[in-house]
Length: 115
Image (cartoon, rainbow, N blue to C red; front, side, top):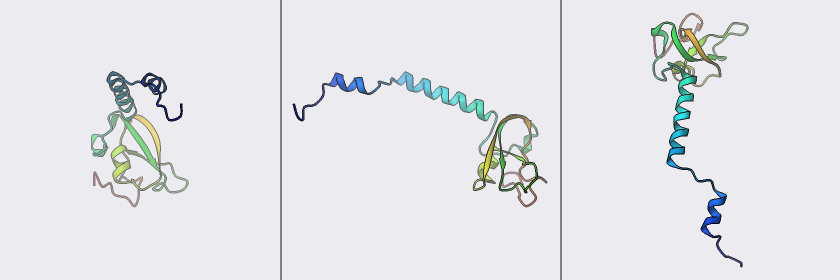
């Protein structure tokens, strides 16, 4: 029959049914994963003043690293605020590290979050 609609039961076979419990469980998994990846990272405050942070997500800035030199590590907040338009690469979560943004490793850059 041309133009006939499919029975309602047939449509549910094509699209998976997702319950609220499924959505909440997936959301909790994503939050746990973010906590594992970001550790004690703060997206608004430079970690420099905290000294060596137990665990935090770190990044390195290719834009600010002179050719042939070892890249410096920066915290999550500085990756957004001080190096937002720069070419960054992730160093993943590191332990006992202090943010290098604004110190002598970056000769022409002052940290906007911890001057």
